[in-house]
Image (tube, rainbow, N blue to C red; front, side, top):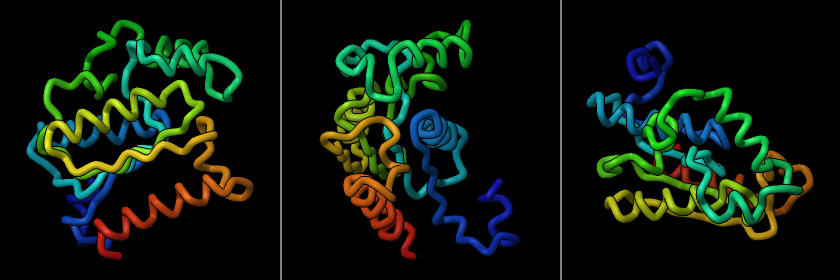
Length: 175
């Protein structure tokens, strides 16, 4: 929609990025796959902040950080159970980490948190993007938990992550 209405919105259709945190990171990653498969619209960048990318819930950080760090394994199971009851958990629309091919996707910044059940799937996705020839930066914020990105008023690491995200977007979008 943004691409199709770029003139009305006063935006450059060649400088559209997608971004999201947690479940929004899933939607952003899925949007890039969908855009590639449909032949557009072209996306300039993807910003994925502690994204949900693997509904199999088999990454080690799911168990390592299962309880006590804001987002918990039981909550993730509940979310997936209500979001995609009968869906194949490896379907790329639910689990972009399991997409057959990640080549041709836009450059990415993937931000993860050390004490987050989703840490390993975000980092694995970054590796898969890199292996597919996609320019990607993966930044793990040590000592942080899921949701830290929104805590800029109280956490230096959150401000640093926000600064990194803004710098990446500015560089790609030339703003």
